[in-house]
Image (cartoon, rainbow, N blue to C red; front, side):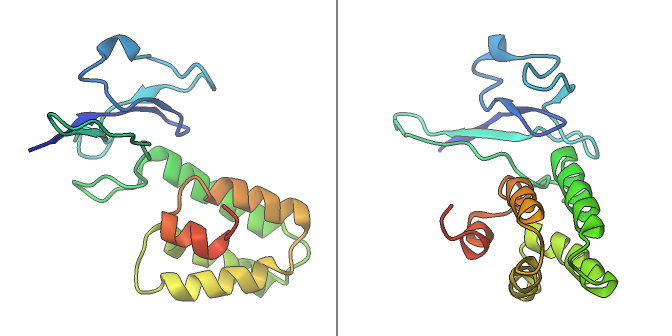
Amino acid sequence: MGSHDIAQICLNGHVITSALRRSPELAQRYCDKCGAETISACQECDTNIRGYYFMPGVISVFSYEKPAFCFNCGAPFPWTSSALAVARELVLEESELTQDEREALANTLPDLVAETPRTQVAIIRFKKLMAKVSSATAGAMRDILVDIVSEAVKKALFPAT
């Protein structure tokens, strides 16, 4: 049976290592990409952040994807909360949308990140409203969301990704 190693990730979401237990020499107190502090456990419940999944005797080509939420307590990780806040701020600044449209778009963001029964409605609303925004806003939103939404949502929102 396999087991997860521990991941170390900076508060901005840069993965330092997904194998902290097996390779402690890779640990960094601060991120070498942005200077933010790094964590290896949920700040809410202190549960280790799941890293690479190792299976004894199995060699795999595995690409680690950092989690958006803690598997133990469900709290969003700092990079998820921060990305959602920035995306919301960006939407609320968009002059191509009415105030009601800006608020509707901002309110769909959490349903894009956490797959729920409302996710499909959020995808449709997001696509409809994003067709009205400036190309700069659309590009920035893509860059922000592609890092925190699931693969299924990513494919629905950004088919070429």
